[in-house]
Length: 78
Image 1 (tube, rainbow, N blue to C red):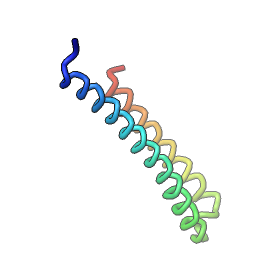
Image 2: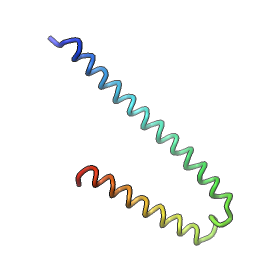
Image 3: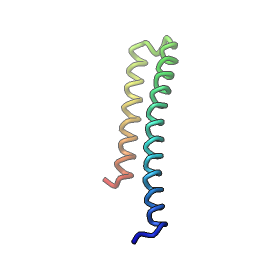
Image 4: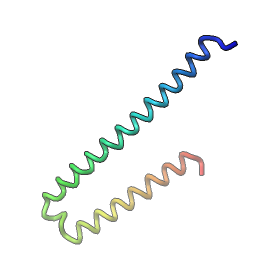
């Protein structure tokens, strides 16, 4: 027969996973609003509509993506 503490611990684990899932969902939705706001602010700057600024944005985004993926892969031990 299972003890009360074991059942309670399992229930807490399920609640923790739900809380993490809801937190991740909130983070994704919040990220959309931050992205949209930043996009709108950058559209206000005349410089950001030039080919040079678009190229720099693409380069900066690519470098940040490669760095982040490298960090994730290193963290996972691959």
